[in-house]
Amino acid sequence: MIESLEPVLKRWDETHDAIVDWLAQFPEERLTWSPGGAATSAGRILAHISRANRVYASMALGEPIDRPVFHVTNREQAEQVIAQGDAAVRRDMETLREEDLSVVRAADWGPLGPLVSGPLDSLWFLEQMIRHSAYHLGQLWYLSLLLEDSGD
Image (tube, rainbow, N blue to C red):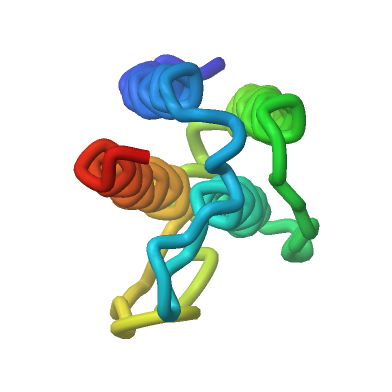
């Protein structure tokens, strides 16, 4: 791996480890539980994180976008999806060269929210993958708090 990606991999490891830690503490039987309304279950959030990570990695590599569909309804599936995602991110980071990091991959980005103006390079997509995972990790912990407060 190129030296300039080492801090990115460190942040990835920290975020990945935090998700693994969260999963170890979350009740398996509640992975499909939703607090109601349009709120998403923990299993669906984990599936979303994993799918988005593949999209961000595809963009960083300049490859056709990979949009796998994941279903997470139990701990084994959750662990598999998280482990496969981690292995793919590591493999992808290993393939990047220094000159790849500054290659513009998109003029802008906004698949589900506000438009981010570019140009956006490979490094931006790797960093966004980490930001996105950390954002949803906060949602996962919030679901944990809701369960705690409800006495379930």
